[in-house]
Image (cartoon, rainbow, N blue to C red):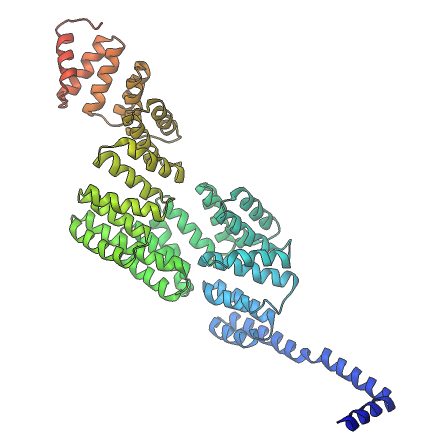
Length: 505
């Protein structure tokens, strides 16, 4: 071994030029070796583009998948293609394959796109991917878009909007405009979100994300029927678009077609086994289908189905809420209370569950004081919901918190577009209780204008006029209350005396 080692050293010493030449040859080979692979990858991408131009996307995917294992740009192109077809899970896998093959703007794009797709899927990796995208390309369009989505989910909506606007200005196209719409919708500005989504769809009619986002806004604003054909077109053109199937299920729920919705939800869950939102949607649709039995008068059947679903999914706040609502319909206050309390424990930010819990306490248990807190949480979660805030006002009134009731009810009646009568009624009742008779008259008259022939409102209005010592007003509205069946002995006795000529003192 020692002799061999010496001979090797001697040979190296005797032929330094030869060693250097070999080293140079090795370096040249090292530099030139990737060239055939890179050229092959470039050819593969060109071949894939040709297949796409000919309308054969499946063939293009097959070509890119072969090249993606060794070439980052091929993997990036594969991810874009998968993403355009709504195949987000496969797109994420393709983008992951670029991690150690790309750098700079290309890497930033791949990671940014991956973060947005992960965000749609609800996976916990989205935040890390967005941060990695920014690290790879701090000013890149796709890293900026990814961070806009992250800020939206973190509740930092002004930052999210600013980032999306920056991406739009940088030429981010439909993806950037879609991110802006997403942030606007989260902020509650559905009109602005709709406009942004429509702009995104107009600039890229084939983009799945903006179509799904627009459908979501249309559904939230009571136009589910308008959203359905849009989603059908997206599904027809991209059969793997899981997000479109999920939103179609929600649209069909809104249209009262729960059985069809369940088919779409099941299909989405089958295509995206690792998507927790898809799995949760199946449960949500099953709950809605059971509640449709309540509407059809089959309350016991609904309770039976929902109880079984609860036992299968004891940690589902949605199932607990559905069962609570069915128990309300069955007039089982204790059963409803137990399920709704568990529902808000599992999901404290569920506005509907908090509202239903308040309803049980106020209406079924006759305990308005216990209803105040859940109603407050419902209003906190959905500040623009007039029904939730009106219920809070009525509970505060019942709990003796008159000034707070007036404050909440005034917010409802002063909101642009409010045309209901209930908030005006409770506001009038609160003002009457506070002996602010003039204000009570104004509110109660508006309540009756919105909903005539309300015996209780007529009675309260009569008492308000009594407080103002207006005998004619008292008699007119007292008589209407009596005619409508009002039975309060105190009012009827006082009315008979004033009608007989006794003065109001």
